[in-house]
Image (cartoon, rainbow, N blue to C red; front, side, top):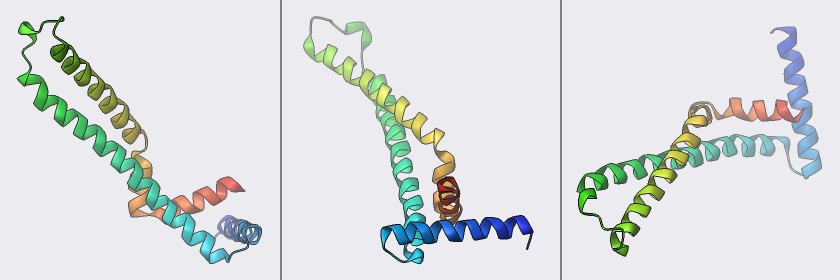
Length: 125
């Protein structure tokens, strides 16, 4: 093993032990919780991304049914419908952007959550 890798491993081991001691639990338990937390974060960001996709699916199925030329601003139903479509579009844009910004967390959380746990420990150091 590389000397740098051994040093990093020792630092991680010390950090986990210190964190476990301060929490009053076993070091293995702290590591397991951190690994599970990475998977939970990945699931949360995936759900956010899927909500955004669902918003756009709803929007693209709804907009062709709207008849914009016959819309009367004085009719509350037409105005409310348009405002709801704009709101769904804004929510869709926001959630898709949030999901895409965190796509690395999603992929890493499902494929290799241990990496993210170690990365979090390194940030604590």
